[in-house]
Image (cartoon, rainbow, N blue to C red; front, side, top):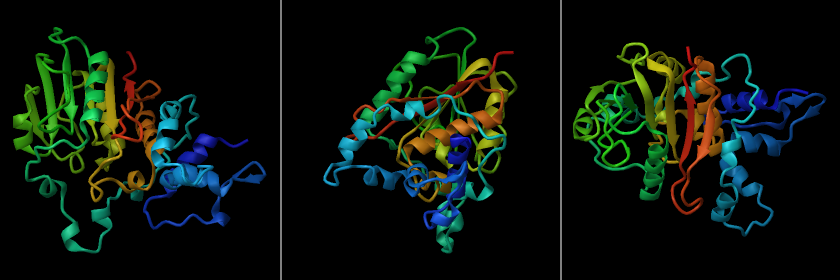
Length: 303
């Protein structure tokens, strides 16, 4: 019997643009049996499968989403990963890089040049994330504890009044970073141009990244850097929803659905090396009614 997780990752890696066609003649085989078209759609085009898998066409997407609450938490359980990183370079292209229109091809520094003092997920999702942070963060003002908010902005969604002697932020817009009250320091850096994190080895106890992992075009390099700068046993928390700047999100992300996104981020942790097996948590506060919110996290292996 073939490895179903490996096949799933290979399918994900092959769907890198919305125009990609999945032909029945190209479906992979498990043993002597070809996988069904429905299976491929469920893995590669989750948005479509959310409707085709419903027995009653009149059922709402809200009802389906509510029924699936917590399902993503099982995605990373007992994964048998393929030996090699399954994604291709083209999976990390963005729409603006594929576009024939010159005005679509803006570097990230230009796209984010003007500050956006807005939030990119709704209030229930923000509250759910803040509550999750309050449950897993080290207590406020713990001596020697250092945090990094990667791809940060004017707000980090940390618990109200949360403080440590060092909370570093990295982002693209300096004006936004200056306005972030939780940060004790910041660096403006385009990680898609320079993915090396400007910190010493074994520096941070915790790294957070909020609704930005889908914009990383060199994720494996960055996750290896995260492992380098985390202290042994340090925690990395990647949170994401289903919202994004479409032209800036990588193509493998915009071509797949929520459960696939969990698998993709889990793969980053696994293939970067130096991390414990990643885990997923669904903290969506009102499935199908407000923005979903997912966590994929892992700890750096202890020395």
